[in-house]
Image (cartoon, rainbow, N blue to C red; front, side, top):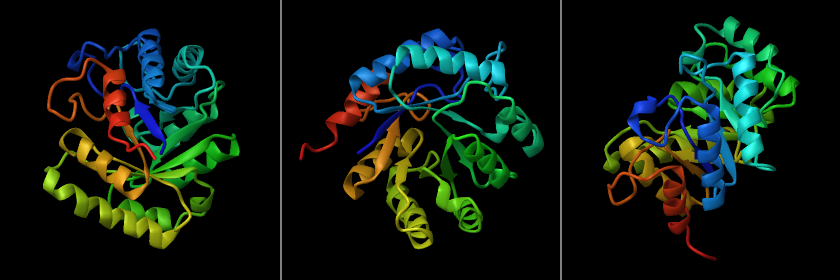
Length: 240
């Protein structure tokens, strides 16, 4: 089972003492997560104002810092539409990247997902297909680059724990009908995070955890940082 650490996301840096808009601080967080058992890192590069950025200089700066702290570990970044106002500006920014991530997430409910993914693939960057809802799954099913994706991210929003299984199983079934060979990484946010992680363990899927998705441990206490969340995740995976 792949456990990916999502170390910062679009979270406000004030939300937790281990969050920061400084790449070196978050590189240390990433290294701690790897030491705790994470096998891949997902990070959101920030600009000078602390906002998520797709700018080539920002992406290079953050990737360089995280790679130096986590040698040999695959590093991925976001391409979320909130970081650029339209598909054209996103593809223009990605075309200028000089330091390339190992993979990048592309949300298929967003306009221009096919173009963003095709550009990433043409540059040798793996694509994680972010599927948040039925509309995203349908769009991905029609994509010309669908079969070239590294994996699908089934991404559940913050929801009541009792709703997690049905929501996840519906999206997983849709993805499997489209391409039964495609690896799936299932994760949730806030209240759904640990329920989604446990379901991923049950189903033999990959998952992720980190301060992007939740601040709390399974017992409800606030985690001391990404490493504590990853350790808690590792402990929930049965030894086989």
